Image 1 (spheres, helix red, strand yellow):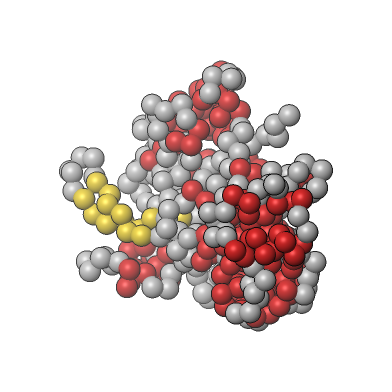
Image 2 (cartoon, helix red, strand yellow):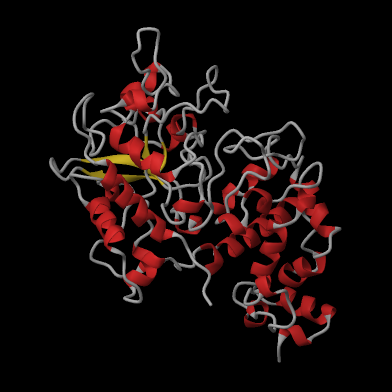
Length: 414
């Protein structure tokens, strides 16, 4: 017997009678001809999540969905048609988000926000550092908590309440699907119903379309493709602790050929001191990143200094990085090559990146208040160089790393 061969009433009754996640019937996927091509293979729970993710009626006024700013065609990143490249347009005509829209591909691999042990390889000293969570500042503990952020943010979807969202689904085109998945009384309690709808989105974001591991690099790991000479050189520079040293933050297991061991992030936080983006008015209210996260002090160890992470933002995955510009939390860079060049020459040639004062001196770290400048990473390679010194990477080596990064773009499978 298949779930999809039953009447609506019988399907709903069966799904209500079983424990959802444990029910074989409720986990069945639809026959290939019963749903749209991009919905084939999804369980009812995942399909519900997709419908909620794409529902433009959950914003106020209607017109913006999760998918508006996380476009599947752009590696689930985008700015919803805003004329400001880094900022997404919200549901209100004058609304813009505050930060660059991140891709949510591979986001389901991020651990919950917590303080983890970090061991210094030279001294052996262990300290607790923040890691994990969602958003650039980790303010959402996990994907489930993240969903409330854009839905209720006045600058984004601007939904007034959980009841508003639940009633929009209840009165919408896929209400029967919600009842099929969660039972006939799913909409009775708005708070509980919202939680269930959020869980459905998490289930959808946990499907393979958000982490297909379908790049040229993944095929290389599997032995199904070869890197070009330039790409291979870039990979070596990427790993070299005296050159790019990219693995220090964009982690991968060098001994592993399993794509899942190459997420290209360690989920920690770092202060890079990126230049100010003039399109984002942050002069009066600078974006302090992690240190402004609500609840950070309460979650931190007793000896942790919250002010030490002002200016720090979460290390993003580099998967699909070639197609998810603009870059950094403030979207200051349009081109991927500029990001790599900035890493290499930020301190050896700061005039290339920062504005100059009346005396012609570059104003480094101009997007942060002076009190946070000491937090900027100036110790790890390649940031350990000084003004006028030779950068760790030459221009040709920068080109090679960019060529390698372009192999991390997921490609449609035939």
